[in-house]
Image (cartoon, rainbow, N blue to C red; front, top):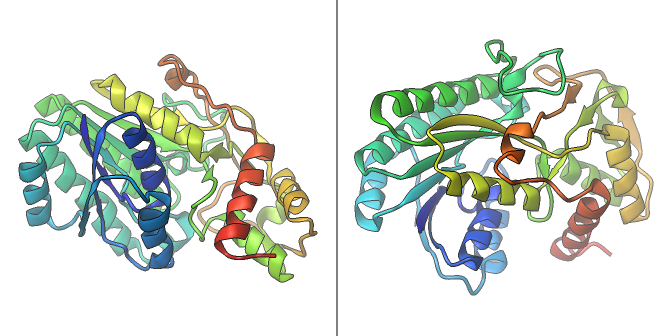
Length: 317
């Protein structure tokens, strides 16, 4: 197959591209290399992590409909994996208009091109954030997600609604993947594991929100990629699915494993809950399991792999 990955220089995008090419698929990528975090990391994912692989890379923005038209017309794509987005709850509180523009308009552009060029399957990144302050856990795809508590979550809910329209009206196969706290080598520097590792290695205090009373289904990137490929292959008519780890871990345990691997204790700054965040996100993953997928990586292994990469990439003694 020939598959378009938007946000191909991103954390999940680059890992997904590698696995798809390993099995013989052709990969086309688009990325605008924005400065939400250091663009050098994105460039290194392309030049170092994907060194030796053959793929087509377009530098551009999913809001550029003329560029998208040229890509879809020229490349004759089979499927699309839409990962390009402005990510993160906290930053969306500072730039809600930007998040709406990229996440909603950009996704709508991709849906429209996919309809026009008869794409066989359109898979897109949603988020566990859509569940908001739902009290029932684990979070199930059948739960109401009508009360998001951040602009980021609202944009992800909006993309699910748009995808439903394109499936219902135009017969486009669409699946939204609600990702649960992805981590691993080559990850995003704005995420907790990076921030904690930076603070611990430099001896500066790390911010621990809700005074550590937090828990997550931390999901290793290899498990995310295998689940994403399962859905790309499935060609489902219209679905949303949770994709997360199968074990709830506390934030304090997460930090403890990181400390063990770095060989150094963290200086913790215990803080109250921040706006837009939730104390716990736990995934019901039975729907995706029915397709034959299961997560296999525990945080002890995943954090060890991250630390080995982190030390090498950032030249930490």
